[in-house]
Amino acid sequence: MLNARSYLPAFLATLLTLCLSGGAMAQVIATAEIQAHYEFVLGDYATQDYSAKLTNRGDVPVVIRGLSKASGKVTRTMSLAAKGRLRLDIKQDETVILVNDSDEYVKVSARLSYGVEGMSSRPVTTTEYWGATDFCLSAN
Image (tube, rainbow, N blue to C red):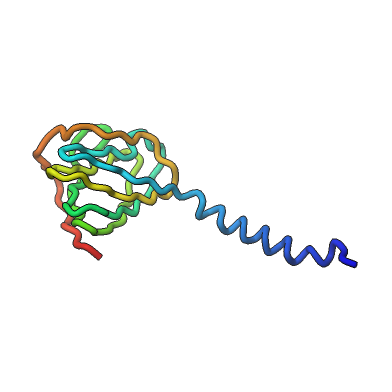
């Protein structure tokens, strides 16, 4: 005959698994499907710092710009190579824009450290990417 004590180890193991997976579930996975000559805005309404792991699933590079929300000035610029990956640490006072200035459709997967408000897509507003240049990332 089974009693409550025989179920206790299984119950505790299940509870521990749920608690540990709860942290992983806090991450958000999104896919930005960016048309040719469009840009994707990420985190326009973010209220705290967050990180984003980006994977370019397309065959063309994507320009990534960081903009100060206060001044609108470019704080950093980099290129995410075709099939490339990178991790960005993004401050709450910064908006990140993924720019597809090519003639091809591109898909970028993003794993965010938490749900971020303020994602949208719009036609490319400028072809000039002035500001601090970090580096060009290659495919991994």
